[in-house]
Length: 513
Image 1 (cartoon, rainbow, N blue to C red):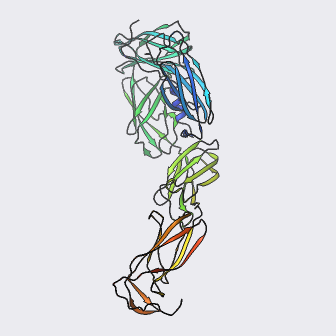
Image 2 (image 1 turned 180 degrees about the vertical axis):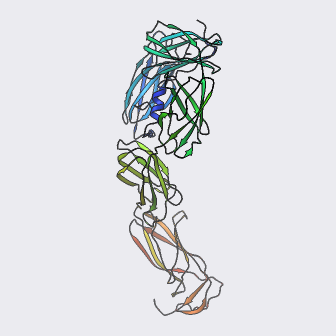
Image 3 (image 1 turned 90 degrees about the vertical axis):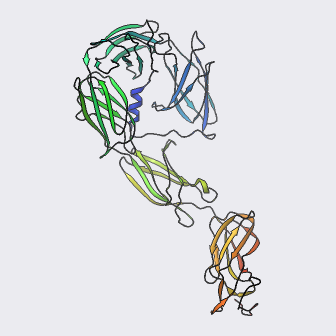
């Protein structure tokens, strides 16, 4: 049996993955971290051959793909994963035409926090299908051949320049073999191959007599065309054969398909759920192109709101907002805009007991995490949560009155007042009121070695008499201690006159304040 000139990697659980992508709720796997992750280790044993190149992939329990990597040469593997239950799949990387190839093997493993799960796996030789493809025009050179079983696994290869092919590494069972020629001109109904067993390849002779057609489908989400790139699958209602292709600019073009009507599987797009359904006006005729359309109609739920600071009500931008399912899985994440507004979700199904967590990662020393529990949402619902206050941690506060250091009867309004920490970094600022009073009470952490610096306005009134002018220089007062939830009253804070400078206010006025 000659080898095929090219081969394609086995595509496992293709239909399952596509249908899962159309599910109403797409759960995002949380990132692994030291506090909520564990390890999986083990060996993959390949009988009679320890040097077989292997690859492993891991999925959620509903077969949502998460990642893959090669297994080491000695068969050992290791993964670090978030807490949860996963499906592992081990595949033989040898080309599809190798009839001695091992069949894929699946394993289920549960990861626990701070623990290592050991899962060893033994591979078994797979079954194989061989054959030759011919068309009405002659040889089926480079025809595409796909074998699919009832478990919805599919394996694909490309025939050689004589139309000969082989697909090894198949799990035991019966298969439907779908074929179409390289020029996308001829197709045929599937060939059914019964009860494949390891070590006993079955040979089939495939003749492509039916002239193929083309299917061009325009994709819409609601009342707007889909502009992104999506992987779309078309399934023939007559034969069950499927074609998967990358749709670009909102159009999926399937060439060389079997005549008849088609079911389309389209994944979710933006806030619209994926959908499986019939192509509208998309009946394919031999030798012609059918023009059809397909519309995503149902979008998910979402929460909106505005995040504000709990101490002063100012908007909190660049904060993180997360939604958690009752299982603890993160189902949606967003970041607040500069004005504090957010929209999180958009692809949520009907859910109850949802938790919303918001935090400002850049200012965790000033604000606690906001937690809202027992939220609910429905499909197509947008629920406005209004203004949400990010809890402020207890702050120290500083009050006082800015006065002329040479005459405390003179209050200085409009002076700039700054608090600086022991390193000279400004930690609070304000402007004194008309009577010289000031308050700084936001985001002040407990600390020692704090200074207050007052900068002049240039002119002042004196006992209500105007104009009374003086020139001042910035003045610092040190030795301030800040304590959480404690108001520190500095009393009068003097600002020094400029020397030399002008001032028509007497020094040491006897009037007391």
